[in-house]
Amino acid sequence: MRKGAAAQVKELPTQTIGKQAKSDKDYSIYFQSPSLKDAKKRGKEEVSVRYESAIPDDMKTIGEGKRYLIRTYGCQMNEHDTEVMKGMLEDMGFEATEDKRDADVILLNTCAIRENAEDKVFGELGHLKTLKQEKPGLILGVCGCMSQEETVVNRIMQKHAFVDIIFGTHNIHRLPVLLKEAYFSKEMVVEVWSKEGDIIENLPKKREGMKAWVNIMYGCDKFCTYCIVPYTRGKERSRRPEDVLAEIRDLARQGFKEITLLGQNVNAYGKDFADISYTFGDLMDDVRKIDIPRIRFTTSHPRDFDDRLIEVLAKRGNLVEHIHLPVQSGSTEVLKRMSRKYSREHYLELVSKIKRAIPDVVLSTDIIVGFPGETEEQFEETMSLVREVRYDSAFTFIYSPRDGTPAAAMEDNVPDEVKKDRLKRLNDLMATISREQNELLRGQTVEVLVEGESKTNPDVLSGRTRTNKLVHFQGSKELAGRFVHVTITEPQTWLLKGELAVAQPAKVV
Ligand code: 5AD
Ligand code: SF4
Image 1: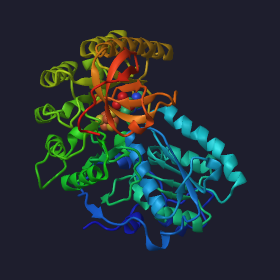
Image 2: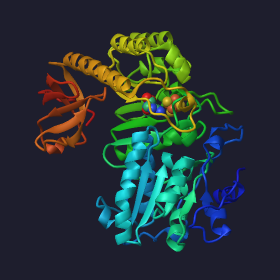
Image 3: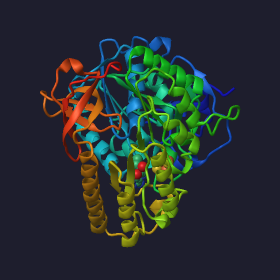
Image 4: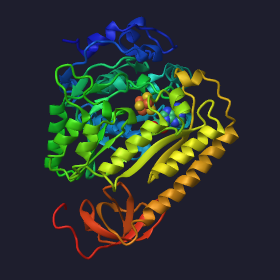
Protein backbone atom coordinates (compact mmCIF):
# COMPACT_ATOMS: atom_id res chain seq x y z
CA MET A 1 0.00 0.00 0.00
CA ARG A 2 1.22 3.49 -0.71
CA LYS A 3 1.86 5.84 2.10
CA GLY A 4 -0.52 8.59 3.12
CA ALA A 5 -0.22 12.16 1.90
CA ALA A 6 1.59 13.68 4.87
CA ALA A 7 4.23 10.98 4.87
CA GLN A 8 4.71 11.41 1.15
CA VAL A 9 5.46 15.10 1.56
CA LYS A 10 8.30 14.41 3.95
CA GLU A 11 9.74 11.82 1.59
CA LEU A 12 10.19 14.28 -1.26
CA PRO A 13 13.34 16.41 -1.55
CA THR A 14 12.84 19.70 0.24
CA GLN A 15 14.41 23.11 -0.09
CA THR A 16 14.36 26.25 1.94
CA ILE A 17 14.43 29.41 -0.09
CA GLY A 18 12.85 32.82 0.06
CA LYS A 19 12.91 35.37 2.80
CA GLN A 20 9.59 34.10 4.11
CA ALA A 21 11.19 31.10 5.77
CA LYS A 22 10.81 31.16 9.53
CA SER A 23 12.78 27.99 10.03
CA ASP A 24 13.80 24.93 8.01
CA LYS A 25 11.07 23.01 9.74
CA ASP A 26 8.27 25.11 8.23
CA TYR A 27 9.39 24.35 4.74
CA SER A 28 10.37 20.76 5.42
CA ILE A 29 6.67 20.07 5.49
CA TYR A 30 5.13 22.83 3.44
CA PHE A 31 7.64 23.92 0.87
CA GLN A 32 7.68 21.68 -2.16
CA SER A 33 9.33 23.25 -5.17
CA PRO A 34 8.12 21.82 -8.47
CA SER A 35 10.50 20.36 -11.02
CA LEU A 36 9.49 19.90 -14.66
CA LYS A 37 12.37 17.44 -15.05
CA ASP A 38 11.04 15.20 -12.27
CA ALA A 39 7.54 15.58 -13.70
CA LYS A 40 8.75 14.16 -17.00
CA LYS A 41 9.85 10.86 -15.44
CA ARG A 42 7.33 8.12 -15.96
CA GLY A 43 8.07 5.57 -13.23
CA LYS A 44 6.62 2.11 -12.87
CA GLU A 45 5.28 2.82 -9.40
CA GLU A 46 1.72 1.71 -9.02
CA VAL A 47 -1.00 4.32 -8.66
CA SER A 48 -3.49 3.34 -5.97
CA VAL A 49 -7.03 4.55 -5.62
CA ARG A 50 -7.88 6.03 -2.24
CA TYR A 51 -11.44 6.40 -1.01
CA GLU A 52 -11.44 8.94 1.73
CA SER A 53 -12.97 12.01 3.20
CA ALA A 54 -10.91 15.07 2.38
CA ILE A 55 -11.92 17.31 5.24
CA PRO A 56 -10.16 16.76 8.59
CA ASP A 57 -12.55 16.95 11.55
CA ASP A 58 -10.98 20.12 12.93
CA MET A 59 -11.57 21.90 9.58
CA LYS A 60 -15.26 21.18 9.16
CA THR A 61 -16.42 24.56 10.50
CA ILE A 62 -13.38 26.74 9.82
CA GLY A 63 -15.15 28.54 6.97
CA GLU A 64 -18.33 29.46 8.84
CA GLY A 65 -19.20 33.10 8.25
CA LYS A 66 -16.52 33.35 5.54
CA ARG A 67 -16.74 33.63 1.77
CA TYR A 68 -14.60 32.33 -1.10
CA LEU A 69 -14.05 33.18 -4.75
CA ILE A 70 -12.27 30.98 -7.31
CA ARG A 71 -11.16 32.44 -10.65
CA THR A 72 -10.71 29.69 -13.22
CA TYR A 73 -8.53 29.96 -16.32
CA GLY A 74 -8.08 27.43 -19.12
CA CYS A 75 -9.70 24.13 -19.97
CA GLN A 76 -12.62 22.05 -18.73
CA MET A 77 -10.26 19.99 -16.58
CA ASN A 78 -9.54 23.17 -14.63
CA GLU A 79 -13.24 24.04 -14.47
CA HIS A 80 -13.89 20.65 -12.99
CA ASP A 81 -11.00 20.96 -10.49
CA THR A 82 -12.65 24.21 -9.41
CA GLU A 83 -15.88 22.29 -8.74
CA VAL A 84 -13.90 19.95 -6.47
CA MET A 85 -12.30 22.86 -4.59
CA LYS A 86 -15.68 24.56 -4.23
CA GLY A 87 -17.07 21.30 -2.84
CA MET A 88 -14.28 21.09 -0.25
CA LEU A 89 -14.59 24.75 0.73
CA GLU A 90 -18.35 24.47 1.19
CA ASP A 91 -17.88 21.32 3.28
CA MET A 92 -15.70 23.51 5.51
CA GLY A 93 -18.53 26.03 5.91
CA PHE A 94 -17.40 28.66 3.35
CA GLU A 95 -19.99 30.34 1.14
CA ALA A 96 -19.44 31.43 -2.46
CA THR A 97 -19.23 35.07 -3.53
CA GLU A 98 -18.71 36.71 -6.91
CA ASP A 99 -17.35 39.92 -5.40
CA LYS A 100 -13.64 39.83 -4.62
CA ARG A 101 -14.01 42.64 -2.02
CA ASP A 102 -16.36 40.36 -0.13
CA ALA A 103 -14.10 37.29 -0.21
CA ASP A 104 -12.02 35.90 2.67
CA VAL A 105 -10.33 33.35 0.41
CA ILE A 106 -9.48 33.96 -3.26
CA LEU A 107 -7.95 31.17 -5.36
CA LEU A 108 -6.63 31.57 -8.90
CA ASN A 109 -6.88 28.22 -10.70
CA THR A 110 -4.37 28.81 -13.47
CA CYS A 111 -3.56 27.54 -16.96
CA ALA A 112 -0.05 27.15 -18.42
CA ILE A 113 -0.85 26.09 -21.97
CA ARG A 114 0.14 29.37 -23.65
CA GLU A 115 2.00 32.46 -22.53
CA ASN A 116 -1.04 34.74 -22.74
CA ALA A 117 -2.90 32.54 -20.23
CA GLU A 118 -0.02 33.09 -17.79
CA ASP A 119 0.09 36.85 -18.47
CA LYS A 120 -3.57 37.13 -17.46
CA VAL A 121 -2.85 35.52 -14.09
CA PHE A 122 0.11 37.77 -13.35
CA GLY A 123 -2.07 40.77 -14.31
CA GLU A 124 -4.75 39.61 -11.86
CA LEU A 125 -2.16 39.13 -9.12
CA GLY A 126 -1.15 42.76 -9.63
CA HIS A 127 -4.75 43.85 -8.98
CA LEU A 128 -5.12 41.59 -5.97
CA LYS A 129 -2.04 43.06 -4.31
CA THR A 130 -3.95 46.25 -3.49
CA LEU A 131 -6.87 44.26 -2.11
CA LYS A 132 -4.53 42.22 0.07
CA GLN A 133 -2.99 45.44 1.44
CA GLU A 134 -6.44 46.77 2.33
CA LYS A 135 -7.53 43.43 3.81
CA PRO A 136 -4.52 41.61 5.30
CA GLY A 137 -6.71 38.75 6.59
CA LEU A 138 -7.55 37.74 3.01
CA ILE A 139 -6.04 34.37 2.03
CA LEU A 140 -4.80 34.47 -1.54
CA GLY A 141 -3.91 31.23 -3.30
CA VAL A 142 -2.49 30.23 -6.68
CA CYS A 143 -3.13 26.70 -7.92
CA GLY A 144 -3.54 24.80 -11.19
CA CYS A 145 -1.05 24.18 -13.99
CA MET A 146 1.12 27.31 -13.54
CA SER A 147 1.93 26.21 -9.99
CA GLN A 148 3.62 23.11 -11.42
CA GLU A 149 6.26 25.26 -13.14
CA GLU A 150 9.34 26.08 -11.14
CA THR A 151 9.87 29.42 -12.91
CA VAL A 152 6.35 30.52 -11.98
CA VAL A 153 6.68 29.47 -8.34
CA ASN A 154 10.03 31.28 -8.04
CA ARG A 155 8.58 34.40 -9.66
CA ILE A 156 5.62 34.46 -7.27
CA MET A 157 7.87 33.92 -4.28
CA GLN A 158 10.14 36.74 -5.32
CA LYS A 159 7.78 39.29 -6.85
CA HIS A 160 4.39 38.48 -5.36
CA ALA A 161 5.30 37.56 -1.81
CA PHE A 162 1.83 38.64 -0.62
CA VAL A 163 0.43 35.34 -1.98
CA ASP A 164 -0.41 33.01 0.93
CA ILE A 165 -0.66 29.57 -0.70
CA ILE A 166 0.68 27.95 -3.83
CA PHE A 167 -0.39 24.38 -4.53
CA GLY A 168 -0.18 22.16 -7.58
CA THR A 169 -2.54 20.01 -9.62
CA HIS A 170 -1.56 16.88 -7.64
CA ASN A 171 -2.25 18.62 -4.32
CA ILE A 172 -5.85 19.71 -4.78
CA HIS A 173 -7.17 17.25 -2.19
CA ARG A 174 -4.75 18.81 0.32
CA LEU A 175 -6.51 22.20 0.15
CA PRO A 176 -8.07 21.95 3.65
CA VAL A 177 -4.71 21.14 5.27
CA LEU A 178 -2.90 23.88 3.35
CA LEU A 179 -5.60 26.40 4.18
CA LYS A 180 -5.32 25.56 7.84
CA GLU A 181 -1.56 26.06 7.68
CA ALA A 182 -2.05 29.41 5.94
CA TYR A 183 -4.47 30.53 8.68
CA PHE A 184 -2.19 29.51 11.52
CA SER A 185 1.23 30.47 10.18
CA LYS A 186 2.44 33.73 8.74
CA GLU A 187 4.53 32.00 6.06
CA MET A 188 3.79 31.45 2.42
CA VAL A 189 2.59 27.86 2.16
CA VAL A 190 3.92 26.13 -0.95
CA GLU A 191 3.15 22.53 -1.74
CA VAL A 192 3.61 21.30 -5.28
CA TRP A 193 4.32 17.64 -5.89
CA SER A 194 6.20 17.20 -9.15
CA LYS A 195 4.95 13.65 -9.46
CA GLU A 196 1.35 12.56 -9.41
CA GLY A 197 0.08 10.80 -6.31
CA ASP A 198 -2.80 8.40 -5.88
CA ILE A 199 -6.22 8.79 -7.45
CA ILE A 200 -8.44 10.20 -4.73
CA GLU A 201 -12.09 9.22 -4.95
CA ASN A 202 -15.00 10.64 -2.97
CA LEU A 203 -13.86 14.27 -3.02
CA PRO A 204 -16.88 16.55 -2.75
CA LYS A 205 -17.88 18.41 -5.95
CA LYS A 206 -20.08 21.42 -6.33
CA ARG A 207 -21.86 21.07 -9.64
CA GLU A 208 -24.31 23.64 -10.97
CA GLY A 209 -26.82 23.65 -13.79
CA MET A 210 -27.85 20.66 -15.85
CA LYS A 211 -24.49 19.67 -17.32
CA ALA A 212 -21.76 17.83 -15.46
CA TRP A 213 -18.15 16.95 -16.11
CA VAL A 214 -16.81 13.58 -15.06
CA ASN A 215 -13.09 12.84 -15.00
CA ILE A 216 -12.30 9.44 -16.44
CA MET A 217 -8.54 9.80 -16.36
CA TYR A 218 -5.81 12.17 -15.30
CA GLY A 219 -2.52 13.15 -16.95
CA CYS A 220 -1.03 12.61 -20.38
CA ASP A 221 1.86 10.45 -21.63
CA LYS A 222 1.88 11.66 -25.22
CA PHE A 223 4.54 14.37 -24.81
CA CYS A 224 3.70 16.34 -27.95
CA THR A 225 6.79 18.52 -28.24
CA TYR A 226 4.98 21.86 -27.79
CA CYS A 227 2.83 20.87 -24.84
CA ILE A 228 3.35 21.49 -21.14
CA VAL A 229 0.44 19.29 -20.00
CA PRO A 230 2.35 15.99 -19.52
CA TYR A 231 4.61 17.89 -17.10
CA THR A 232 1.91 19.79 -15.21
CA ARG A 233 -0.64 16.97 -15.03
CA GLY A 234 1.59 13.91 -14.62
CA LYS A 235 1.34 10.45 -16.08
CA GLU A 236 -1.82 8.84 -17.41
CA ARG A 237 -3.95 7.37 -14.65
CA SER A 238 -7.42 5.97 -15.35
CA ARG A 239 -10.18 5.94 -12.79
CA ARG A 240 -11.67 2.49 -12.21
CA PRO A 241 -14.72 1.87 -14.46
CA GLU A 242 -16.91 1.02 -11.47
CA ASP A 243 -16.14 4.43 -9.91
CA VAL A 244 -16.81 6.33 -13.16
CA LEU A 245 -20.06 4.44 -13.81
CA ALA A 246 -21.26 4.88 -10.22
CA GLU A 247 -20.65 8.64 -10.46
CA ILE A 248 -22.58 8.88 -13.74
CA ARG A 249 -25.48 6.81 -12.38
CA ASP A 250 -25.63 9.12 -9.40
CA LEU A 251 -25.69 12.18 -11.69
CA ALA A 252 -28.51 10.55 -13.66
CA ARG A 253 -30.49 10.09 -10.43
CA GLN A 254 -29.90 13.75 -9.60
CA GLY A 255 -31.44 14.72 -12.95
CA PHE A 256 -28.41 15.98 -14.89
CA LYS A 257 -29.13 16.15 -18.62
CA GLU A 258 -25.66 16.08 -20.14
CA ILE A 259 -22.34 14.60 -19.13
CA THR A 260 -18.91 15.28 -20.59
CA LEU A 261 -16.29 12.64 -19.90
CA LEU A 262 -12.98 14.38 -19.33
CA GLY A 263 -9.38 13.42 -19.91
CA GLN A 264 -6.37 14.98 -21.62
CA ASN A 265 -6.36 12.01 -23.97
CA VAL A 266 -9.53 9.96 -23.33
CA ASN A 267 -8.64 7.34 -25.94
CA ALA A 268 -5.81 6.18 -23.69
CA TYR A 269 -8.37 5.30 -21.03
CA GLY A 270 -7.74 1.89 -19.49
CA LYS A 271 -4.29 1.36 -21.01
CA ASP A 272 -2.81 1.57 -17.52
CA PHE A 273 -5.02 -1.14 -16.01
CA ALA A 274 -2.87 -4.13 -15.11
CA ASP A 275 -5.70 -6.44 -14.03
CA ILE A 276 -8.45 -5.90 -16.60
CA SER A 277 -8.75 -5.30 -20.32
CA TYR A 278 -11.20 -2.41 -20.61
CA THR A 279 -10.87 0.42 -23.15
CA PHE A 280 -12.50 3.79 -23.75
CA GLY A 281 -14.83 2.09 -26.27
CA ASP A 282 -15.91 -0.36 -23.55
CA LEU A 283 -16.54 2.50 -21.15
CA MET A 284 -18.65 4.38 -23.71
CA ASP A 285 -20.63 1.22 -24.38
CA ASP A 286 -21.44 0.95 -20.67
CA VAL A 287 -22.18 4.67 -20.26
CA ARG A 288 -24.56 4.40 -23.23
CA LYS A 289 -26.82 2.18 -21.13
CA ILE A 290 -27.22 4.78 -18.36
CA ASP A 291 -30.31 6.98 -18.46
CA ILE A 292 -28.61 10.33 -19.18
CA PRO A 293 -29.88 12.09 -22.33
CA ARG A 294 -26.51 13.27 -23.68
CA ILE A 295 -22.94 12.02 -23.31
CA ARG A 296 -19.91 13.85 -24.72
CA PHE A 297 -16.20 13.39 -24.28
CA THR A 298 -13.10 15.50 -24.65
CA THR A 299 -10.31 15.40 -25.73
CA SER A 300 -9.44 12.58 -28.05
CA HIS A 301 -6.13 11.85 -29.71
CA PRO A 302 -6.30 10.65 -33.33
CA ARG A 303 -3.59 8.07 -32.77
CA ASP A 304 -5.56 6.00 -30.25
CA PHE A 305 -9.01 6.46 -31.83
CA ASP A 306 -9.78 2.79 -32.52
CA ASP A 307 -12.43 0.89 -34.49
CA ARG A 308 -14.12 -0.35 -31.31
CA LEU A 309 -14.79 3.25 -30.28
CA ILE A 310 -16.18 4.16 -33.71
CA GLU A 311 -18.42 1.09 -33.63
CA VAL A 312 -19.79 2.09 -30.20
CA LEU A 313 -20.28 5.76 -31.15
CA ALA A 314 -22.24 4.64 -34.21
CA LYS A 315 -24.84 3.11 -31.86
CA ARG A 316 -25.78 6.74 -31.02
CA GLY A 317 -28.62 6.92 -28.45
CA ASN A 318 -27.26 9.23 -25.80
CA LEU A 319 -23.80 9.27 -27.44
CA VAL A 320 -23.93 12.52 -29.39
CA GLU A 321 -22.69 12.84 -32.97
CA HIS A 322 -20.00 15.39 -32.21
CA ILE A 323 -16.30 14.55 -31.98
CA HIS A 324 -13.54 16.96 -31.06
CA LEU A 325 -10.50 15.56 -32.86
CA PRO A 326 -7.46 17.84 -32.55
CA VAL A 327 -5.30 17.67 -35.68
CA GLN A 328 -2.79 20.46 -34.80
CA SER A 329 -1.32 20.55 -38.35
CA GLY A 330 -2.10 19.22 -41.82
CA SER A 331 1.56 18.60 -42.64
CA THR A 332 3.08 15.18 -41.91
CA GLU A 333 6.48 16.84 -41.57
CA VAL A 334 5.23 19.28 -38.91
CA LEU A 335 3.25 16.51 -37.17
CA LYS A 336 6.50 14.56 -36.93
CA ARG A 337 8.28 17.50 -35.30
CA MET A 338 5.30 17.90 -32.97
CA SER A 339 5.65 14.18 -32.14
CA ARG A 340 1.94 13.64 -32.75
CA LYS A 341 2.63 10.06 -33.93
CA TYR A 342 0.24 10.11 -36.90
CA SER A 343 0.50 11.40 -40.45
CA ARG A 344 -1.84 13.59 -42.48
CA GLU A 345 -2.93 10.47 -44.37
CA HIS A 346 -3.66 8.51 -41.20
CA TYR A 347 -5.74 11.40 -39.84
CA LEU A 348 -7.73 11.75 -43.07
CA GLU A 349 -8.31 7.99 -43.17
CA LEU A 350 -9.62 8.13 -39.59
CA VAL A 351 -11.97 11.00 -40.52
CA SER A 352 -13.30 8.98 -43.48
CA LYS A 353 -13.90 5.96 -41.26
CA ILE A 354 -15.78 8.09 -38.72
CA LYS A 355 -17.87 9.74 -41.46
CA ARG A 356 -18.71 6.37 -42.99
CA ALA A 357 -19.93 5.09 -39.61
CA ILE A 358 -21.69 8.33 -38.55
CA PRO A 359 -22.57 10.26 -41.75
CA ASP A 360 -24.02 13.30 -39.92
CA VAL A 361 -21.10 13.59 -37.49
CA VAL A 362 -19.93 17.10 -36.61
CA LEU A 363 -16.18 17.43 -36.22
CA SER A 364 -14.25 20.15 -34.45
CA THR A 365 -10.53 20.48 -33.92
CA ASP A 366 -7.53 22.32 -32.47
CA ILE A 367 -4.87 23.77 -34.78
CA ILE A 368 -1.52 25.40 -34.04
CA VAL A 369 0.00 27.73 -36.64
CA GLY A 370 3.57 29.00 -36.75
CA PHE A 371 5.16 25.93 -35.17
CA PRO A 372 8.98 26.26 -35.35
CA GLY A 373 10.12 25.84 -38.94
CA GLU A 374 6.58 25.72 -40.44
CA THR A 375 6.94 26.68 -44.11
CA GLU A 376 4.30 28.36 -46.25
CA GLU A 377 3.74 25.03 -48.07
CA GLN A 378 3.30 23.20 -44.76
CA PHE A 379 0.81 25.82 -43.58
CA GLU A 380 -1.05 25.42 -46.90
CA GLU A 381 -1.29 21.70 -46.13
CA THR A 382 -3.17 22.63 -42.95
CA MET A 383 -5.50 24.85 -45.00
CA SER A 384 -6.16 22.08 -47.51
CA LEU A 385 -6.82 19.55 -44.73
CA VAL A 386 -9.35 21.94 -43.18
CA ARG A 387 -11.06 22.26 -46.59
CA GLU A 388 -11.13 18.51 -46.98
CA VAL A 389 -12.45 17.63 -43.49
CA ARG A 390 -14.83 20.61 -43.31
CA TYR A 391 -14.80 21.05 -39.54
CA ASP A 392 -17.81 22.83 -38.11
CA SER A 393 -15.56 24.71 -35.71
CA ALA A 394 -11.94 24.95 -34.64
CA PHE A 395 -9.85 26.38 -31.84
CA THR A 396 -6.87 27.98 -33.54
CA PHE A 397 -3.67 29.11 -31.84
CA ILE A 398 -0.34 30.70 -32.63
CA TYR A 399 2.41 28.46 -31.29
CA SER A 400 3.61 29.64 -27.89
CA PRO A 401 6.97 28.31 -26.62
CA ARG A 402 6.70 26.66 -23.18
CA ASP A 403 9.78 26.41 -20.99
CA GLY A 404 11.04 22.88 -20.56
CA THR A 405 9.28 21.41 -23.64
CA PRO A 406 11.35 20.08 -26.58
CA ALA A 407 9.84 22.54 -29.08
CA ALA A 408 11.02 25.49 -26.99
CA ALA A 409 14.57 24.47 -27.90
CA MET A 410 13.83 24.24 -31.66
CA GLU A 411 14.92 27.07 -33.88
CA ASP A 412 11.87 29.24 -34.53
CA ASN A 413 12.43 31.01 -37.83
CA VAL A 414 8.81 32.00 -38.53
CA PRO A 415 8.44 35.77 -38.01
CA ASP A 416 5.60 36.99 -35.78
CA GLU A 417 3.83 38.84 -38.63
CA VAL A 418 3.82 35.63 -40.67
CA LYS A 419 2.32 33.68 -37.75
CA LYS A 420 -0.37 36.32 -37.28
CA ASP A 421 -1.12 36.36 -40.99
CA ARG A 422 -1.45 32.55 -41.06
CA LEU A 423 -3.80 32.62 -38.08
CA LYS A 424 -5.95 35.21 -39.83
CA ARG A 425 -6.08 33.23 -43.07
CA LEU A 426 -6.99 30.08 -41.18
CA ASN A 427 -9.67 31.84 -39.14
CA ASP A 428 -11.15 33.38 -42.30
CA LEU A 429 -11.31 29.95 -43.91
CA MET A 430 -12.86 28.41 -40.79
CA ALA A 431 -15.48 31.20 -40.65
CA THR A 432 -16.47 30.50 -44.26
CA ILE A 433 -16.75 26.76 -43.68
CA SER A 434 -18.64 27.14 -40.37
CA ARG A 435 -21.12 29.45 -42.11
CA GLU A 436 -21.61 26.95 -44.95
CA GLN A 437 -22.02 24.03 -42.55
CA ASN A 438 -24.58 25.97 -40.51
CA GLU A 439 -26.43 26.95 -43.69
CA LEU A 440 -27.16 23.23 -44.23
CA LEU A 441 -29.40 23.41 -41.16
CA ARG A 442 -31.70 26.12 -42.53
CA GLY A 443 -35.29 24.91 -42.23
CA GLN A 444 -34.28 21.83 -40.21
CA THR A 445 -35.66 21.07 -36.76
CA VAL A 446 -33.07 20.27 -34.11
CA GLU A 447 -33.18 19.10 -30.49
CA VAL A 448 -31.95 21.83 -28.13
CA LEU A 449 -31.07 21.58 -24.45
CA VAL A 450 -32.13 24.99 -23.13
CA GLU A 451 -29.53 26.58 -20.89
CA GLY A 452 -31.34 29.84 -20.05
CA GLU A 453 -31.46 33.45 -21.17
CA SER A 454 -28.87 34.45 -23.73
CA LYS A 455 -25.96 36.45 -22.32
CA THR A 456 -26.60 39.36 -24.65
CA ASN A 457 -30.40 39.50 -24.76
CA PRO A 458 -32.67 38.46 -21.84
CA ASP A 459 -35.64 38.12 -24.22
CA VAL A 460 -33.90 35.32 -26.06
CA LEU A 461 -33.25 31.76 -24.84
CA SER A 462 -29.99 30.04 -25.50
CA GLY A 463 -29.22 26.34 -25.78
CA ARG A 464 -27.14 23.72 -27.56
CA THR A 465 -27.83 21.02 -30.12
CA ARG A 466 -26.52 17.47 -29.72
CA THR A 467 -23.66 18.59 -31.95
CA ASN A 468 -22.88 21.41 -29.48
CA LYS A 469 -24.02 24.24 -31.75
CA LEU A 470 -25.34 27.35 -30.05
CA VAL A 471 -29.03 28.11 -30.78
CA HIS A 472 -30.97 31.29 -29.93
CA PHE A 473 -34.77 31.44 -30.00
CA GLN A 474 -37.69 33.13 -28.26
CA GLY A 475 -39.47 31.23 -25.53
CA SER A 476 -40.54 31.17 -21.92
CA LYS A 477 -37.83 31.13 -19.24
CA GLU A 478 -39.46 28.03 -17.71
CA LEU A 479 -37.98 26.05 -20.58
CA ALA A 480 -34.50 26.33 -19.02
CA GLY A 481 -33.11 22.87 -18.30
CA ARG A 482 -35.51 21.18 -20.75
CA PHE A 483 -35.20 19.72 -24.23
CA VAL A 484 -37.14 21.47 -26.98
CA HIS A 485 -37.32 21.28 -30.74
CA VAL A 486 -36.28 24.39 -32.63
CA THR A 487 -36.60 25.05 -36.35
CA ILE A 488 -33.58 26.89 -37.69
CA THR A 489 -34.59 30.04 -39.56
CA GLU A 490 -31.38 32.08 -39.65
CA PRO A 491 -28.09 30.22 -39.58
CA GLN A 492 -25.06 32.42 -38.90
CA THR A 493 -21.34 31.74 -38.55
CA TRP A 494 -21.15 31.11 -34.79
CA LEU A 495 -24.84 30.84 -33.98
CA LEU A 496 -28.12 29.37 -35.23
CA LYS A 497 -31.25 31.48 -34.81
CA GLY A 498 -34.57 29.67 -34.81
CA GLU A 499 -38.15 29.34 -33.62
CA LEU A 500 -39.76 26.83 -31.29
CA ALA A 501 -41.19 24.06 -33.46
CA VAL A 502 -44.86 23.27 -33.25
CA ALA A 503 -44.30 19.61 -32.35
CA GLN A 504 -42.19 19.19 -29.23
CA PRO A 505 -40.37 16.01 -28.10
CA ALA A 506 -42.56 13.55 -26.27
CA LYS A 507 -39.91 12.47 -23.74
CA VAL A 508 -36.45 13.87 -22.83
CA VAL A 509 -37.52 16.90 -20.79
N1 5AD B 1 1.20 26.77 -28.13
C1 5AD B 1 0.01 26.94 -28.77
N2 5AD B 1 -1.02 26.12 -28.62
C2 5AD B 1 -0.87 25.06 -27.80
N3 5AD B 1 -1.71 24.06 -27.46
C3 5AD B 1 -1.08 23.26 -26.59
N4 5AD B 1 0.16 23.70 -26.35
C4 5AD B 1 0.32 24.82 -27.10
C5 5AD B 1 1.39 25.72 -27.29
N5 5AD B 1 2.55 25.56 -26.68
C6 5AD B 1 -3.06 23.93 -28.02
C7 5AD B 1 -3.22 22.60 -28.76
C8 5AD B 1 -4.08 21.81 -27.82
C9 5AD B 1 -4.93 22.90 -27.20
C10 5AD B 1 -5.60 22.51 -25.94
O1 5AD B 1 -4.01 23.94 -26.97
O2 5AD B 1 -3.89 22.86 -29.96
O3 5AD B 1 -4.88 20.85 -28.48
FE1 SF4 C 1 -0.67 18.02 -24.79
FE2 SF4 C 1 -0.43 16.23 -26.79
FE3 SF4 C 1 -1.15 15.41 -24.30
FE4 SF4 C 1 -2.87 16.84 -25.77
S1 SF4 C 1 -2.09 14.77 -26.29
S2 SF4 C 1 -2.37 17.17 -23.60
S3 SF4 C 1 -1.51 18.23 -26.89
S4 SF4 C 1 0.81 16.29 -24.90
